[in-house]
Image (cartoon, rainbow, N blue to C red; front, side):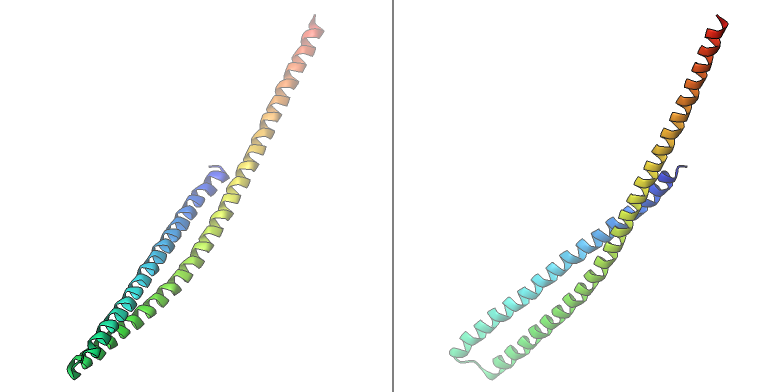
Length: 152
């Protein structure tokens, strides 16, 4: 098997690795975007709830309702904090996967260069062999012509 063919087989594996890494990176980036939207929804809901309780407070609110409000706001704040932490973890994963993707992409580029170089070397070798064969055939034809012209 030619060297370029062997290298090409390895390059195909490198392409798969790079494609898988790119896919994982895309998945994580869309996951972060989704989680950021959830965080924004929590924030929007918190503001909406706060506005409602403020409006209710203007017309008078019971102590038990106020306690429920503060308890609920505490839960919303906890959920928002957890969401921020989760997004931070995902961002770290994105950084790691991005570094891995860059590494696999570099490996793929290196294999592409090796395959191209091997193919070029093989073409040069084939050209040399063809030229050698042409030269030998020309030499044989020349020898035959000389022998033919000497026999006449």
